[in-house]
Image 1 (cartoon, rainbow, N blue to C red):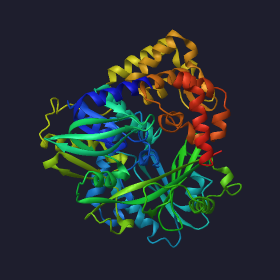
Image 2 (image 1 turned 180 degrees about the horizontal axis):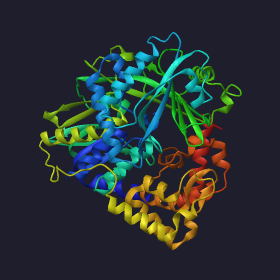
Image 3 (image 1 turned 90 degrees about the vertical axis):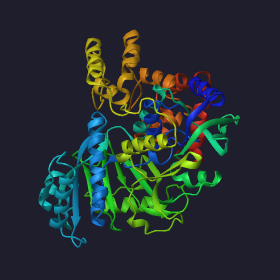
Image 4 (image 1 turned 120 degrees about the horizontal axis):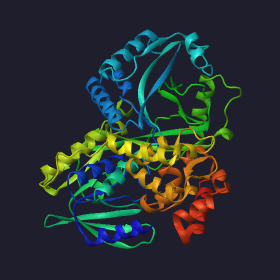
Length: 539
């Protein structure tokens, strides 16, 4: 909380090269890239970091195999290249995973023809992943007994990538990188309107927690508001070539359904892709794909019924899944960039490719669409446009993405070994502490080692069934700008995804967690979380 208050003061007092409004994946990579290359950057978001679309994805970083059907070969080629680059840059976080795909009889293409598409996809992916393999219905059943093959014509396995933790955590790590390089960042800080006077933008900002209002001064503005890009542009009287259409995506989290840790891929009853995705000891199922007009959406009974009906039809479960089996839900809109500005297109055919519109005369940029796979490209393109606006980047050739060098990781592993860190791994943990802490915190994991070395009790798992140590809570309180309890439970971690809210509220350790995160405001913040859960009927 202190870090946020300090940053808000700096935002009001300083002038910046660039103000980025919106801290989803597009805003986060823009901030990380620009700060590392020498720009003075401010990054704000009306909600929490990755609080909207960027925390409601399928957690997949894929090369866009489905776009082959629309003959978007150049896009698939670009996305495959981006996926490979992401996997090389973040080997601890972005990992290869096999997709086990089952095709039903009567599908619009025969299985062998679709399999040929996976071979083309593998070639376009530069043979970076394992080779696809064709599977008969019997082989599918042997590989994963839970799949219902009674109406299957066969299928195949191919590879793509996924985020080992969760999407919001991945996004926040870019925000953290920006902070490490000097960006002044604040969540729960809204922007009302911006006016340009003598080449300087004056943006009216307000703290949603205190209602404090002030002005942020910058030479340029980047509108990275995700689904709200068009709304912010309208407030600032910006005309753009692109605009957004919205597709609502819903996922349900249930107890683990599968034997193998592979993504089970099907085509749902409406003909669109449907996934059963491993999530540790849980399974994520979905997604829906419905056009909506409003970027603010919620899960409906119809959404739940669609997902449950499909998973019950596609899998041979001991008993059908019902709403009572749902542990948590993910719901967000996919902003789809459409050219022309009228928001009219065949939205089913639209891809998730990004588009950047630039008003050089007013030093104003808008980022549309996009997906996690393509995030490094977005950061690089933003830097190119900012330079063309006349803003000097003193370290323009610096690499701004990727895990720390091997030497840093070796130092962490050496110190962890001396500390016998892996021997402290809590019982029933899904992986060793050395692996987990490096993936989550990279170089900052050394700070957590310092805490544990000073006090071994810091290596204790604080909350039952939540793989987070006491030291991680202390680190989050200092460095991760936790403003609400939900910020930690839902976005810095995935605790809220794998535990029901009533379990979280009643779990031993939640009171101490609140005390670590919020100090004297611990009780107030816990009650705020409970009240919000009640409003949304989550408990």
